[in-house]
Image 1 (cartoon, rainbow, N blue to C red):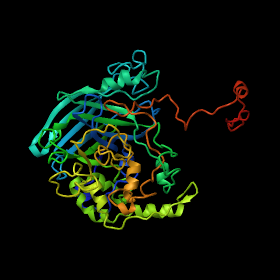
Image 2 (cartoon, one colour):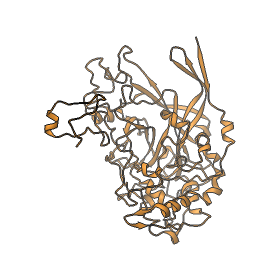
Image 3 (spheres, rainbow, N blue to C red):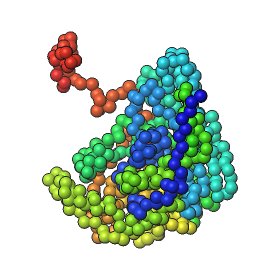
Image 4 (cartoon, one colour):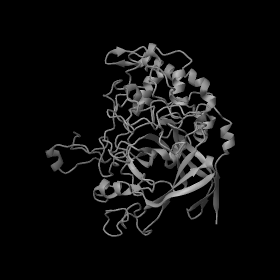
Length: 519
């Protein structure tokens, strides 16, 4: 049988391309941010969240979320959207500060087929065509998954903590997947033996940003809290989520005594990996073998998409946090705020106002601490706030979460900049407006650079301050996915008058409609 063999490039060669550029997150989430991963969306990590659980009765738990498969058109059938059986999805935790994961949660998926003789795929008419529960036979390509906990530093090779769990189908529409959240979404939340929970499945794209304006030279429709366009509205993503007892993540295996205790802060990031070899058979099947190669990586939103040079984006996705020390010089003198200043000076006419932005001079120690080193105890944030992992040996790019800081009773979308110590950059909640926070941080509009903590530096935003769908108040927090049979505002049918609608359509030789006008 004829075979075609593919092999991933050696990771050693990629690691040799270490870059001298800023590791500063900026303005967007990680969607198709590098050449290779843009062609492999089922391994594309889009967002990572880490926060103390806010659901009633769950304050002793922490929630970790990682999203994959960006820009899902809800109507994209008949296969719709699954996790890739050939990808190893991982959430990693560093609780000692050396950039090496001390705890790894591995998710692996397996797809079954109920009926190979249908013309459809993901769902079909094996019974009545309606998927009423996770084991319904009309769910024609169900996925199961396992979760393994690995602790490399302790020598533990892996402990299976869950297996045979089902993912819900994509939200096809009200006829095929009726009552989606109650019948399919929430039943896919499983309890773990340690009291925690796990979920894997489709969710609403909860990241909000006017991304079209970002890539059009920061042509924001508004630089305030409203007036922008949430470009990701109506799309879905695939989510893996864990809720775990706080003590399951600390180096001491206990709840931290205080927010400045040695075990209070952990680093969190997510990766996706593929096998080194893939063989395509003549009959269309494929097999994979060899070791795992990391091809996607994400911690803070976002390092790679708008900061890393094009020629090095793929390399960044392949390296671990232990290689991040080379970026320190560039963090101290980043290019991005200079570009923002240039663009705003040339094009920044908002409501008749032209903004000329002054930015802090190097060295930008404030940015190095916020995003690469952790914020130490200091007079600005007070004696009880820090995101430094005690014992850290250098800069590592990942989310830092202080597990001893309780959820806020009055959360601010601006996190720490809004006086809310439970929000970004202390972890990241689904409601945190990381776009506005990071725009202000790169321009020096924070208390860490008081001379520049003034408008517009400390007031700029992209005009989008919240998701269009309300988040859930329970695990897994991200909203129910958008259904396929529900037109978005950008593709709604044209409107015709009652008289025009009653008349038979008249078309010319090229199929153009002659007797109706779009309303």
